[in-house]
Length: 119
Image (cartoon, rainbow, N blue to C red; front, side, top):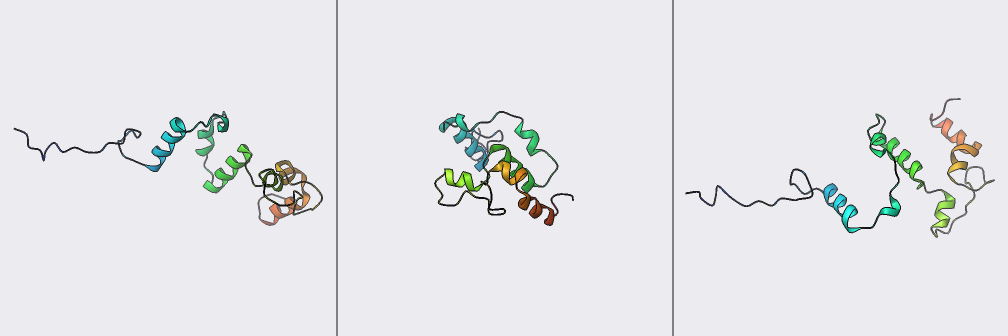
């Protein structure tokens, strides 16, 4: 006759393949079933980007660039932050993603000083 000690109950988290609770599994469950997040989904092979062999901080930066969530002056102003939308580097144009990476010569000089761009 089996004893109770041999067949003890155990808690199983059904939102994880191993039955263990993790913050990641709880977040994934919440985002997929409790929150309407369709407006935030962007199609693409995002896992490919996260598997790239580059530093994690570069992946996060790339993700932010591709999602359009870098805190440029114009974006902050659009969200109600009381600030100027003029580029703090050149003070001649609006600071948006395009200007920050392509149009601003002063920002390019900052990148060169940090070793981010070849001369």
